[in-house]
Length: 201
Image 1 (cartoon, rainbow, N blue to C red):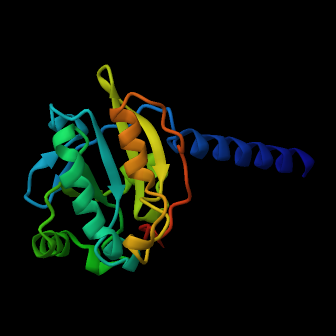
Image 2 (cartoon, helix red, strand yellow):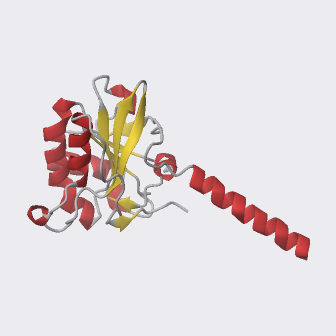
């Protein structure tokens, strides 16, 4: 009985180490992917040859927090895309658990809001799992170093989800301004506030 308990404990430790290993952190190389955009095209991080980095955001149609940030994401894209840091949105939820986040519904939402950035679906949820995203929205600011993209910031967009004008810290904007100016990103990680991701069984 003791040996069985010991083996089971070792398995849990290894499982924990494995999941920890695959949750990307600040400083890690961002995993590339190829996912279907709302226009039907398959896109990856390297699809945009002019990108110096990305505002990679895990977001969705149905979460009220995501909805409150849609206009702010559009504004961030309009401000930074020409400077090499466009928004790249990934829809992480299982449509079986959240029908309002199905691919056709994504297309409807992107058209309704006029998203000027890619909005792709992580159908297998493998990308979401690999990055370690837990909420919508959950942002990863990426910065190109050589041929790879490195993670420079993880967390929330700003410090006031309900009222954009009341936000006193704009974490994503601060991170990108630092990268563009050649400075270190002062705040590299914050808590992502939003709805939990709807995982498939």
